[in-house]
Image: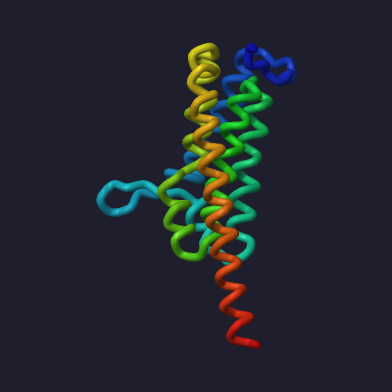
Length: 165
């Protein structure tokens, strides 16, 4: 079964290239635009994520815009699913106080997603084969992360109720 591509808007090659460049700039802004002492780079996604409540939602919204842009650029369905899983992993783990914020600074879903898009557009067949295995692994990881978060919530609520009652 071949990995199908979503229909993209008809655009000429220059428009498509400019579109990918805009997505790349946004990705860099969100993930690697700030150089720390020692050369490590972070982006605004990690800083925005520090704002309780809305920070992670805003970061997820911008990451979702990049995924939608990848769909418009002609990414395959399989590549889009992998991109969505990257955003989901970053969003779920990023919701955990302190550790999630550190994870946001390291995981860099937007950069990963732009790498996926570029690989897929340059070598669609090879990317498709490798994506299936990685997709299964990522789905298992996301499932385990969701179970971990659920377990933590249940433990915290249990401790809270036991201390109240």
